[in-house]
Length: 608
Image 1 (cartoon, helix red, strand yellow):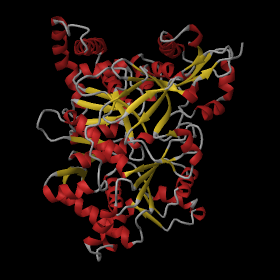
Image 2 (image 1 turned 180 degrees about the vertical axis):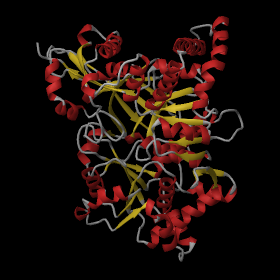
Image 3 (image 1 turned 135 degrees about the vertical axis):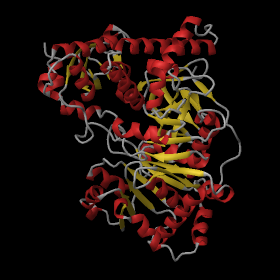
Image 4 (image 1 turned 30 degrees about the vertical axis):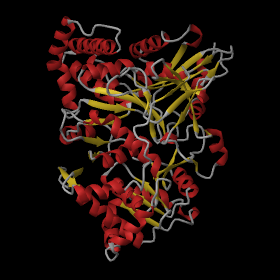
């Protein structure tokens, strides 16, 4: 199959702007709990629609008082926190355009985005961010204001606009249309300088409203309960931004968590108790590996692995029955599943807050077995696919019929077309307007409303899409063999000791790989085997560790032909990091930069 369309849910075009439903809900249901916010003592407290409306209104007045006007661009550089959403909606209320900046961005990255977008003001989280921008501020002549969240800028702006009448804000809001630009989101820049994707209010409204209407049943633990989610995705990324917009428009209680590591995230999941979450596969991998390590420490690794096997088999059988290819779980499997639900699966769910029964995953591919495990453990994960240019999700697995290992069918109103060369093309109301100040790139990506994604994929007979790689990442060996590195890298990364994997081999006689380690998993592995803690240089030469990594490489090689298989690999002492310019802010590998930084190690892989 080369093309598939899912009919739209409604033919009525959206009207107004992103902030309108916030004001409407505050008018009709002022006591509705819109958000959860941590107070100074670390306790979560509710924020009603009326309270949030009043804060947005006060901040919007302050922004107007300080010279921000309709169409101005304002940068936001912060981790995921309540104030980001407050600024987003205040700026959208007055028709300003938001330019999100990753909090880990370098001075030069900040300069390019603020310069290219002609930003007139910037909001940063703390002093370090302010200093980062200060180093390039002399090259940003249009930047007039720099506000700092941790220095009380919200209250400062409230005070500045207190004299303005509410009607001034509403006149601006009523001028916003679906065609108005809402945000300029810069791509990660894996292959060069980041490009600014121009997304309209209509793009984000179409995306968010479609997701809410189609997937609303999965937002709840049980029918009729209050839907809530804890957002820990970066709001500088389009996925996190879509979640923010969808929750406000859909009346879902929203909380923010600025730290993605398990020590901070898991306690907040247990305190906030969301009914569903949206995350990247990395988060689900961390939850799974944490549960596995805990079981090993308690001497229950054997039962845990059996529980994993039962969960996978159970979910696989349920999937087969849904598709009419099997009878469903056998009586014996159901009994085993019931036993392990009490012993293992309930504890996995408890670690995620106890109420989660559904989740959505995007950003990168999820391993089929991992998805089956969580489904068998009582947490159904709906995997999807999209880009910044498609306002986040373009496809997703539907609530009633998941096909694990795929990224689902087109969301309502979107058409997916697979070109003759395997490239995935998209068409729909969520497709962006083009790249800011870059007509050449726009012309190379948009073709009569069709978005050429640069991703390779296949559509099955039911319209489910599987992503197989990136056009620009295809390696061609000196023997002429084309190899898509993604499938190999993902399978190597399935091993709990592996953090990252990059496959090399372009213009080389065979395929090889560089592998980095998960430090936390390695420390646990050493402890469980009674081995002393080793320094990085010693660790990568440990024969037992090398044998473990070799197992993951052998497993990856079973997925491809001999000509495409990884012949040799090297374990690196340090991970690839954003600080060293080897990862994008969304944690994607910068292949050229890595190969350049590790050119000696790559050369060593090809010495006779």
